[in-house]
Image (cartoon, rainbow, N blue to C red):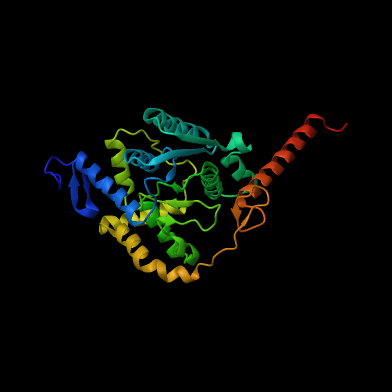
Length: 316
């Protein structure tokens, strides 16, 4: 098979485009996609400070590398969620990349900074790990960006992620979520930082090819708590449709963004935003979700400490 652009031996075939590329021409294709997304969606400019959220996975590592190569003012942020060896190995990968490319990196450790980790807290308060993870990440993304004076937060969400999210929201007719699904989430409050997804037109496979072609290390396995997540099932269903009809995911997402989303905008109520009475971050309640989680974690710890003391000194 020959490269569509130059005629040399192809290294990858993109079925949805019916096109094969050599390494060099794939890099051109990938760069064009990212540049087009940033420009067309008005994500950020050359003078903006960009906080890239990285997990150590292929998508966020690809985004970090690409934005650095494009010359943007980029700082990465990694959150260690305390998911055992998985979190520690992910952090090592991110830190090695930071050293190799002399790229600024901010690391936050949930257990060290706040005294709890995701798996233990999920067990104690009987909440799903994924739900807690999302709440904590969203809070810290915005807080770190706001405290650091960043103009925008960039995440590595890809075409597969966005199509699966859309599929799930359509199945349950989450009208509010459908109205807000977009590669750009603008700031709606002085304390909310704009969020963007520069890789939303690129697939997981394309991001995998990018990191492999560029020799970028990444953590290969999924989060151990992702097993059974609805998003994985939705991706499997969409993969079957994509295999039968290449380009399905792209058409599904693109046509929704162009034609469908506007029909749900009237269903999206503007929430009454206020500042959390504890931390000052933006919320719709008196106390934000993150601070409520901290309060629950502290109560559980106090009860555990009290139980331990009583066990050590039982009444005679």
